[in-house]
Length: 256
Ligand SMILES: Nc1ccn([C@@H]2O[C@H](COP(=O)(O)OP(=O)(O)OP(=O)(O)O)[C@@H](O)[C@H]2O)c(=O)n1
Ligand SMILES: C[C@](O)(CO)[C@H](O)COP(=O)(O)O
Image (cartoon, rainbow, N blue to C red; front, top):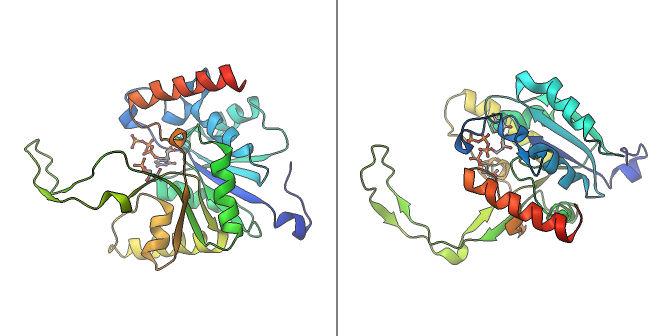
């Protein structure tokens, strides 16, 4: 489905920005993480297909490693996503930069923008649709999240390997592990990224680790919808083992 041109139809559409320009240092040596394979298919292709399963998503903009734009564009063309508009731009030195650069390639009249890590290749379409639905229902920023299985302690970080003193134990029932896609009203996402550029260049602000964090920082309102355990991020080698197992089960039961 290409993006419809009538404003009424177009209102139904969301675009997705996929930051995919990271190295994947924590996964160990090898190709950039988004290009490593899962079940014989690059992780990035899984992530883009996962978004494309949503009827709401008409455009996907991938922020690729700056020296890999042509390679990523060819890869996505080879794996064909019929009916979807897929564009590739150069990402930046941080995830936040990559998202901002991807967002710049989204037409201004697309009202809903998702940001989805290439590193979350197995997100179920139900999560994508729930995030889009919450933005359409009026939220300015939406994150999918799951409850924590572990107790979490706040510590005084040590980088020298000595034991780290515990500061406190946040009440677990009010904590959530946040996933992607995160969904935004386009103008809200664009405004917070623009403001971050201005204020970070003034040197005052530490980086955030997700886009909703920027909305929070600048006084916006973020809501949570249920995430899914299969939307986990492929970060360390064990995550790849789990992802291969989930994919094998899906291929055996669902045929994809
Ligand atoms: N400069 C960057 C850094 C990260 N990302 C993307 O942001 C997502 C989440 O980041 P993460 O899992 O931390 O990926 P990496 O930065 O690649 O991992 P690492 O920190 O282990 O190097 C990934 O899809 C990654 O490709 C990006 O687009 N541009
Ligand atoms: C955006 C994110 O996936 C939400 O959990 C996460 O913050 C990315 O963190 P990373 O350290 O860049 O992987």
